[in-house]
Image 1: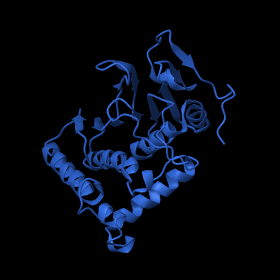
Image 2: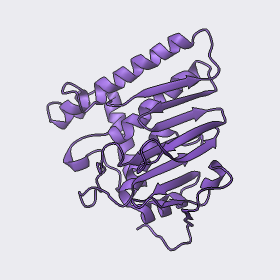
Image 3: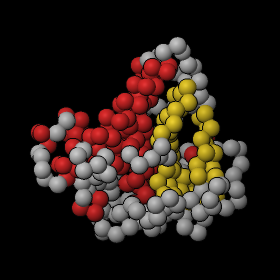
Image 4: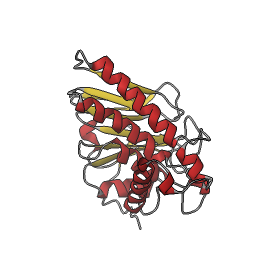
Length: 257
């Protein structure tokens, strides 16, 4: 998937090595189906028109349906056709992390953290999760804490302005990074997809969108380094933050339409 996965298990048992091996196999299977870097993957062949949806693995249909759901939830700011090319990676990467977490839970683990390409799914806790600063290499923009959290970040630090606004077709440049935090009921697949979409919205629309959704909090870093957050984010932050943090309230006048 062009990224690195890591897993921390706090309550390992005798079967944990076998379970981790099963997770590795599952991730390789997801990569084989959905990698846009592989010419022989189902998603690449579907995108080129060589096969139809019915000819693909059933998981391809399920992923495309999930992408349509997220598109509806985000007013069309999420798409599995960025730049006109079929690419559901905005869902698949978080879903792969979620699949690894599902396998761990099925094996009886209740205290673990799975991370893949900036997406983090935790179980149990509490855990502390560092958010990389998009403008200062090697620094953290924040440290988040809590139990059973899903945390996803989209930004320009590693790949430049690569997220497109589906409504204009142009790169989204209003944010340096956006982090969304959700509780146990959402999961990292949806959290990650929402983060991609919200990044494309720009800061005001993104923060207003997050503020309207239950159990979703956002941390935005603007291109000038200014940080803004939604009302409930402080419960995931240390007692005090830097002086350049600016609070965003749902009543601040920002709207999404």
